[in-house]
Amino acid sequence: MKVVILCGGKGTRLREETEFRPKPMVPIGRQPILWHIMKYYAGFGHKEFVLCLGYKGEMIKDYFRNYLWNTCNISLSLGRRPEEKFHDRHQEEDWKVTLADTGEDSMTGYRLKLVQRYIPEGETFLFTYGDGLSNIDINAAIREHERSGRICTISAVHPSGRFGALKIEADGAIRSFVEKPQVEEVYVNGGYMVCDYRIFKYLPDDSGLMFEREPIDQLLREGQLHAYRHEGFWQPMDTYPETQYLNQLWNQGKAPWKVSG
Image (cartoon, rainbow, N blue to C red; front, side, top):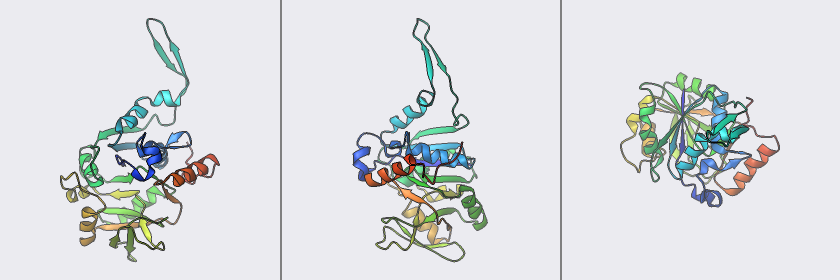
């Protein structure tokens, strides 16, 4: 199942880092947060990625273009016939990564619309943001999505504030979506979504389209938005203190999102 990751935003609330690099390339330990997200999905067997690039997207392209250089020991021959020899293998050799330029100023819904051509018609896919980590059970979320029969399943998590609140009925249907509530005893959209191909019918050709607004509102009206409740770890990386916190968890060996292999 393909994994679409939004990687194009400017991350203005994390200016300390994003002035120099795209937000998904901010490091957690020795690797960018984007790598951690992809590694987590790969741990559940989902290793085909479509990255929606925008702001400073060339840095993400360079990272993957030089992935062997970034992960292996290398011997070089500096003669007239230069040669490179990579001594190590890496655990990501079976990943497939599509790097799609979706515009520097595009909004989230339009970025998703622009990568429709990389999703086989009729195929369900996974969809998330390039700036949040969790220990959600990806395959359990897929099963819940399939059980519901709805078009889009959002992973509902407990917030650290600031995010759109979801009202979830007993059967898992979402009946309301309130952006950035002032209360914290609620569920919010944590990303890590599962979408039917039918979602593209809700995405008009509009560069200002925010996935979290018009498409979500229409899905709500039609009863096509579902929730997978996640009671475990979830942490966005929107501020410098949050970046420090995630690095602390990783460096201390306490990262809940770390997978083996």
